[in-house]
Length: 329
Image (cartoon, one colour):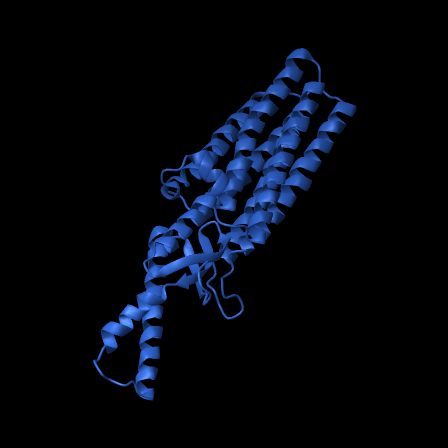
């Protein structure tokens, strides 16, 4: 199935074409709702170009300047895209709808207008379907709605919401144009334009909040953190788990951190097995050897623990285990 980048490219290509034919239909009909649809599609096209640029920049590998990579750039461009939806898609569309109500004109509706609406519905519906199906390889047993809310890439969320509103907008615009033409009351056209604009405003606000949360680096989902703690507590050498902190770098990359109190007797048994010699008085070299053995055993244990966490939580890209030397209470 499609990746976020391919979904964005499909949306970009589809909306570029749809914008052009809607402009032609507006010029032919003079419909305010059709102009709103053209503005809507034009804003979507520009926003999807921003999303694609953000995905490309965000996919760069970590380097000396950014040790955790550039994934956050996706959210910066997501915010810019959401701002474009709000100010251009919502603002201009609502303004034009109000102007249509102030200076009403019954739109001219012909075969071209109907054809453009039908073509736009098919193209934007197809793009929406591609974006929805792009989630399927990654969501596992989660429902599409839950995956969209909790785990989907912000670019995929933006495409689904924008094209969902676009499909609904085509229906609203068609209903407004038809009602204005059939009744001779041009206000239906202006109301349709305002409804389209307001729906875009709601989408923009939602996307701003989602990208803000990811830029701030919110905690991982509760069930993921609970799984992390469960693995730590069940580990044979761990006596207590303290100060657990988590962060989402991107929807598919987590940082997990915890302070652990290890069982002294666990590593004591390793030393006893390695160095048990009846009647032997330890020398200075023996103590160095004991320390080296303990450090090696602890390092190996932590490595195995991190591997177990990654096996259970594949998105755990960075795991920070700190040793707490205090006694467990």
